[in-house]
Image (cartoon, rainbow, N blue to C red; front, top):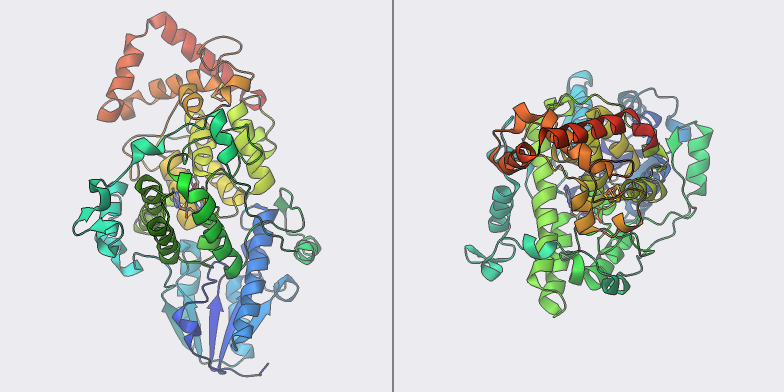
Length: 517
Ligand SMILES: Cc1cc2nc3c(=O)[nH]c(=O)nc-3n(C[C@H](O)[C@H](O)[C@H](O)COP(=O)(O)OP(=O)(O)OC[C@H]3O[C@@H](n4cnc5c(N)ncnc54)[C@H](O)[C@@H]3O)c2cc1C
Ligand code: SF4
């Protein structure tokens, strides 16, 4: 390694895109720096698989760049622990290598962007921010779709993105004459479908040395990791997982994307892609994921339009939409608490020890695997936190810490906006609140649960039922004029006052004993 470079190009742990234009040319005067940092690894309590996943992917990426011929400095915790902040570390390296220029890719997290932006004024060298070249909606176009404080319909945005990128379009119309296949995407898994759930493709990256490093530097974490780590941590592995998904899961992805089951050993993965970590670290890009999925759809008679549309909607629609909402509304978004929710997160979120079977399955799986699929996050844990009024900051910390794919730009709008309605309706037109009926419709959990999903009141009544009505009643002022909830208030008003009181008392009882539910 040389003692002096003209330029340092800084890479964050979620900027592992080897197809970025930075890497198109070799320049021996440019030093690429990628660094583990204790402050970044511990600003929220993280799941150990997430820490291992990021550190392994960063090291693999540094080695990859080196093998391409670039000058690379990979710093592990041992070498960075003496720097109290990322800024300190950057300033030290700028001085050490006597560089005249610092370049960085625009961070996806508001806090980190502010941190880098401060360096423009503080360093007496040229500091330049570059595009991460990852998203399908360029950053500078976000404000043409999203305005601060304004609700934007995902569907409107998604259709515009389909047109703009000419995906599943036939001229100006959607292929198949329909923009969405939601009705075909709400199937419950029957016993006879369980055999079709594929054995998930897992990887095996040794993480023993990372674990030793984390322990040596007393980085706090939770959860366990089986050495080796089963998540993809390189581009090759990510592409392998993408091919596996297109072959084994895409033919049934849309149909079962909202279902839940406790009856398969692969209940945790079902037909989901598990590509979110690869996407969010940028090992692979959204456009190439969509291209490969479309290619499979075009070549295979086993993948129908409802399946591919359901998948494209997640990546081109929801993922890009959440990023737009985030940037249009930061930094205020992280402070939102429209429903004034203030309860503590129950202790069972940290051990899965609850008699609510739906929650126990989702939480235990999340603790074991640092992963849950969307409906588990939204309609199981998210719905419970919404109904019971858990403080959004506590819920946010749990989601940000536990999921391997959790990064603030995508986690916060999903958690505080979509799941908790803390944004007052920037994302949804009504809260995603549901009683036990919904879980019973979409899963086979209720048949083996301690509670009875059919009952609202009584020692064994499903807690979600009374909690749902208590939520509806408690927030009447905020929701009764919402036309999408009018029928619900009609149903509530038609109940006798005795029934209403019994339900509210039941909910209150459950709230007082929430930790032992
Ligand atoms: C409360 C809550 C918190 C969430 N936190 C995160 C998070 O921190 N990081 C994250 O990537 N996703 C998050 N999601 C969205 C979604 O649950 C995950 O993207 C998905 O479960 C990842 O698993 P998968 O790759 O198997 O997804 P699949 O079901 O295979 O979907 C394919 C891809 O679509 C994208 N996608 C689907 N839904 C969404 C969505 N609502 N928002 C953004 N992208 C979406 C993801 O990139 C995902 O990889 C959250 C959802 C909720 C309700
Ligand atoms: S009965 Fe209620 S608590 Fe039990 S699994 Fe069904 S919805 Fe969940």
